Image (cartoon, rainbow, N blue to C red; front, side):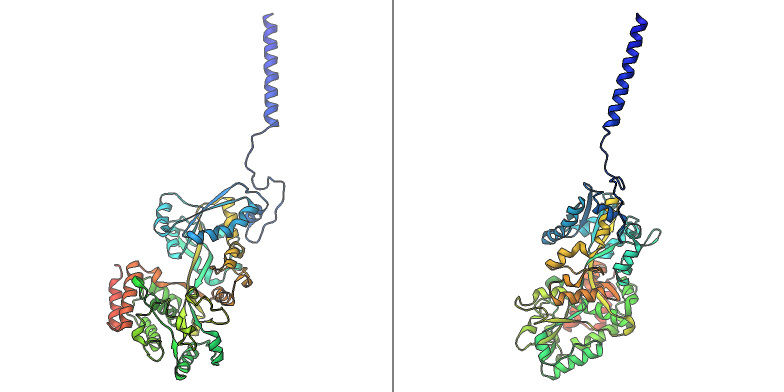
Length: 458
């Protein structure tokens, strides 16, 4: 009897075990959907396989973190620009903007608190992360052929940096702005019969022609409160690129080429020919340091114009009269080259995106950011100029912005604002101060250059 009970107990246990095993096989635990598990064969897009997978819903429910300097309205517009992608793919791009971004990002990276993607407002800040080996080579995240196709060589060069194991494509470019532009009152300019110059000689001939007609050619002002002088440094940077080329420019920004050098003195010869000729500047040389940079272009819009030419970045149009119509009341031309062997360099700034964590959904997002479509909404709302070759010029809201975008995209050389890249004590300190003193006449050119050199950190 005992043996029978044991037998039946054993059989019962085996039956129960079999039933439990079957139940487990019939209802497996849910697992995240991985690539290829949707049953759908997805052809790769030019940017990469992961972007195609994302549009097929493979990464729905995943999160990609992003950090950068966009705050306030810029953050709102950025989030608007990525909303469509998030809805199509189910990827949640969680952007965190900070006004203290520049001061905090390296601390976060060093501490291991690394966002998936970081938006840098200048390449100098990213270089630290590259040298530390934190940034991931874009050629391993995005199809390298796409990078070469969708960015000009100038932008590719600017995104290439040296890490512990050699050169990498450290980031891809998003928005940009340019400073190498001369704005003018188009309607009055055309009525006067003036012609847009394409060489420096033609620019100086136009300057003399306007002066000979009894008018003042240039609107120049460098007053900006504690930042007085930055406008002069922009002129110097633009002319440095045109006279001495990008290599000399890079050496100068890095402190390897002195301010008191033949190269810099040659630059200032070109600038003095305009700035220090009272017949060429509104109010004369003495007024330059007292006229606010935002007020400087306003005499262009008087009838008749009190001055005709204003070299400045594309942002300056926000200081133009509200009723002024782009392409009608004002337009711009590219600040002409001086030595043609340096091509058509453009001075400016921009945003470069770097990646610090490699996951399929992160690859999908950065591949998306390598397309103009990623910021189309921002372009259409105004305030963004794109570096992507696949961004349509028809997206831009007016002909002036469209022309600025085309100039930036086609630049043979693009360099960041030099004073922004120099040590703060120089770039936003002695460079501004002593150039202002030099323009005002309180010190000589030589004294100004030597003072700046003496201030460079040892």
